[in-house]
Image (tube, rainbow, N blue to C red; front, side):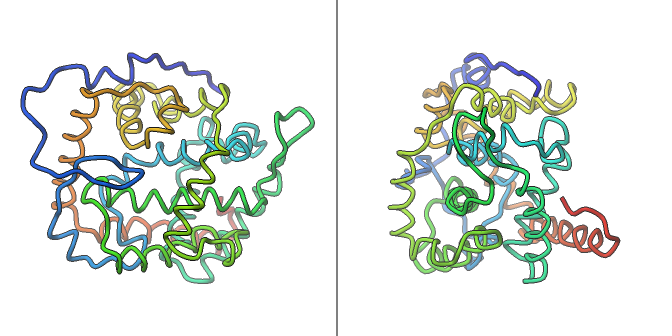
Length: 315
């Protein structure tokens, strides 16, 4: 694996200049995970979300690395990814293929048919069958463990909800309940049983709080994740121009407890810059039709179905 070291200065570099102008008019978001300023958006509110895919917005482009950090903060998931013998899933070796696999899974789980979910499950199961701890591993794990998959699915649910909450604040209760019910497919597409998915949002919050006690990011996993956030796996022109910005955005999207585990500094200057980034994302959301994000997921499904018809590997 490529070694990539990030200094504390890299994270804060984009946020060190003092901004004399206060951030846009906004009010404080009271949620437990996304303590940010937000502005209501009439167009976003008119969507009446009932599915997790209804929450897609421009934050989807900048939030993935933060969500990966949350997933890999569980030691079983973190070392499973770090020690995985499946090279095709290694973001440092095959970043485009890794992104395609993740996008295809999310598309199948959220807007796909039962047949689509069966296809991606079979393909992912083939890869997961090879991912298990060895005598040299620091802990015991296996990718088929439904408890580990439940944690990953819970993080993916937060990925969608956080996109909305960072920009616009909490959903109303009816929308939040409908979205939460839809989110169970993020886990049940693989080995998570329906009965394992917390019964409602209150039960999910309790599950999340309990799970935080089990999280820890060891140095090898931390270095891997810092490289992911800084796009160390991309060709030099890309990581040189976008790497520090993506690390900054990733740090902003992380809840404070995960920033602490990653040892990523964050202060008032960075937060002020991040608020302006969120304002830019809200503007982009006004300009980009929501169907553009759904179309991107549809492309993943078309590609998966075409590969299956041709007998090609899906992941």
